[in-house]
Amino acid sequence: MTGDPIGDVIIQRGLVPESVVQEAIIELKMRGGRLGELLTAKKLTTEEAIAKALAEDLGMGYAAAIDDREIPDDLIRTLPINFAKQRLVLPRRRTPEGIEVYIADPFDTPTLDEMSVLMNDTLIYTVAAPNRVIDAINKVYDRGTAHAEAAMEDLKNEDLSAIESDIEDIIDIIDSEDEAPIIRLVNSILSQATKEHASDIHVEPFERDMSVRFRIDGVLYEKIKPPKKLQASITSRLKIMAGLNIAEKRLPQDGRIRIKLAGRDIDIRVATAPTVFGERITMRLLDRSSILLDLTDLGFAPDIYKQMESLVHKSYGIILVTGPTGSGKTTTLYACLNRINSPELNILTVEDPVEYQLQGISQVQVNAKIDLTFANGLRSFLRHDPDVIMVGEIRDRDTAEIAIQASLTGHLVLSTVHTNDASGAITRLADMGIEPFLVASSLIGVLAQRLIRTVCPDCKEAYQPSEEALREIGVEVSKLNSVPTIFRGKGCQKCVFTGYRGRSGIYELMPIDDEIRERILQKVDAGSIKKSAVKHGMRTLREDGAKKVLAGLTTIEEVLSVTQEDN
Picture (cartoon, rainbow, N blue to C red):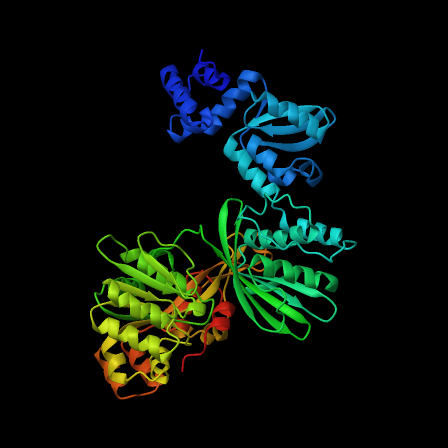
């Protein structure tokens, strides 16, 4: 016998040899922790196998999966989340015999005793793997919309004269036990937005009430309408979290909030603006723990992917990515850096802000207060022997000139500009006062992009569109054998009855060849440059969108909404 009841069960059931368990117990005495965690970390067994063995040995029920939707809110309110997470317990439901409870360690007698006191009822235990219990705890305590409405109900008769004015170290907001209703309301709004994969939160004041809207897959949805009397409290709370001056209500302010939600780091950019009915607040949510995309994940057509792969492996020149705000330009730049990132290359970035942290790459954040601009950051980079430089955005002549000089002296420069299409980037540089011969000699490629919503895979249906609808996106049925079958979403619970779920990119890649360089030197307009590029095989945004419609990824209406007609 090992002296550890879980270890004894593991040995008796033949999950792990006794000698290995004994070694693990000795290791735990030196560093602490749980035996099951250590054995599963060493891949000697699984948490599920241990949980099943414990249940069989003690004659308890075993849960291979936990459905968080069946757990009622009234049971959760009796159990603090910190206790649930530390002890790995979660109430399941009330029965005539007592309360059923999920537990990861049925030999933890102190926890069993404390649970009986907390729940004040007879307890019936079901054993579940620790990872299943933790996942269910995070989901159950993160029922954002219900909590937001409950918090607003609590606030109806609340004294709102004082607001908590100090923020502690970053904690998981669903671990927060703060009873202040305004704090719970704001936390629930943030957690619900993260849960629904919103990219932005808009808190907007109006004459008689407020509106909280989430942007999901590029479309705004109204979520709650707090009463007008909560406006000052909500605004103050968000400004405090973002480190802004709550006394200044006449000028726009920018700040940042860092929170944790269910173990994920979420970075929130906060911008305020004074309106006639009070300050509106817009928040951009960035999941710092998001998996960094590779070039293969961006939805490039094979020919565009091949050209991009070639461009990012050039040793010098400028690659520009263009498009409006929120079109995924930064994600594309990160994917390019991720593709070429290696110990042999010195890669530096200057960004506003640093959205994702890239391993092995030095990243600098713009700070206007100390005059650390894109231009100054880029200028200093050239003294650090870089191979590749990424500039978050070329906004002015100073930044553009330094980027061009860097590219002409043997550096690969990646950046973004705000234009409608690829050819527009060239005229945008000219508007900044850059000489055409500098643009022609430094620019090697321009990628324009947009994000389009993709058809929900759970409710998509096939149909045959009219020839007129196809003609609108540039598809001539006469050039095809027949009218193609395409897809649209009927609308279901998983896509919130929109027919769309998730987004993909459509692209317009313009490599700079000799003919386009000649046209740049001639100072021709963007339309003429675009015609030359199309003549040499460039596919426009609408044409790339049409290919994705025919492939069943999106709809005609979505492509028409984000692209312009090709002249």
